[in-house]
Length: 494
Image: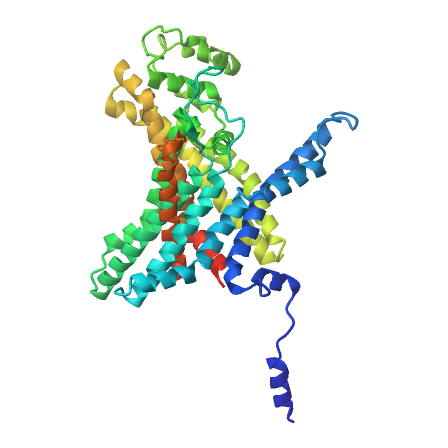
């Protein structure tokens, strides 16, 4: 036997795979069950990992603040961690939802395909396959969302303005715990449908050699436009109706904005008509403590004497220059963002450390920090443009015009400008970011709660949307753009 033949035969022998690779590929699991297992594992990890991390940070901070003998009644770290791990295993939690959605879609393919072949024999083979995929995904989505909706929220807080302690029974309201999922699925489904239609349009135009520069520009700007429009709704809601945003999301925006809540309250009162320029409506007391804190004249806080509120107050100690304030905001926001993004980038580098990877991680963190810094800067400078630099020269400098500017126009200008900072990100990142904020922007105009007898509408919207997304993934994973498409493609692989 020749040496070459021996090497060939040795090379053809299957080499033992690592336990980790076998676990990730789930080769020991029947192919039809792999989507179910992968989805459950990913759902479980995504549910418990953030909670365990937050628990660990909270535990460490408490140990540093308190004496060793203090707080014996507080639950131990192990008991709290065990509770998190145990609760995630319940049937009406997110991991079970993921398993029912992905696993149900895979398991129902074969029986649904038989029914479609029997009752829709007049359709083409491809049409029957698409219908079977869509129907299987629709049924799985309906059942999976019902799992989450079956979880009754305890100690739910009443809505603002609702009577508390009343003997009259309040009408049953559907919880908003699934609304974000529904909005996410709906925006993704719209993106899949529009993307498919646009791809066909582009293919026809390119085949006819009539694909124009304008259409190419639209292709590049659609994601920034979606991101900017969504951010406009989100920032307007954060400023005037923060209760329409998820609490954690609103809290994060507040920490990034670093703005004095008294300024927000003043502009909110302008919108409501409570603060009127040129009239003594008793609003001076709101900003007087701020004037004392920054050593400004107290008359600046009185809208009856000072028209409008000086832009220097909006700058919060950065001086009268709007441009210097914008530059200062960018520098501070960039530093704050680097404290967030750089540790994440370096943590991902641990898997495969290298000098090139380190440089790439620093560049990635810096670029994302530039985006967030410009987002905050454009918002604040947009307010200044409307209040000082451009607005008065266009709308007028009389009292009525100043009132109109501070009654929403200045904030609207900042909301419009801030989202265009996404142009500092890469093309792939723009897609993921646009699809991330779109459902949150939509959520600001959709009621967070509604009568429970109308819950079937949300279930229907989610089921149709999820069916569109999963059918798209099964037929062409690239039709679902961004990270989600790659993730679902991996999950549904058998």
